[in-house]
Image 1 (cartoon, one colour):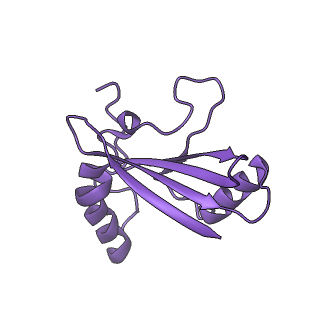
Image 2: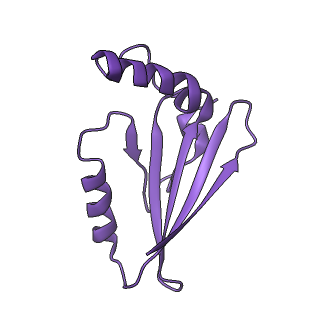
Length: 128
């Protein structure tokens, strides 16, 4: 299996980052298989990981503006059957999740504090 990752700077007032990862598979993958892998990967009840994937909603896949001002990472995917790849998209607010929030989050874990303490559970600022 091969994986390719691209990070995109997003033209926003704040530091939004979006990544696109292409996972090239050796066999056909069903949507249910990808959901199962994602849920197994984050089965520890990660409080700041949100899965975004909706067929009909306004936000069908992760959008950087939804994470502005928060410590959340939004993750979604699409399956490209033509090329045999799974395209995984994720977004963060780089000012919170990327640096400041990450240091508070790490400190909480290292010192045995609740993971979400220190303002990390603040809801996103959308619409910003």
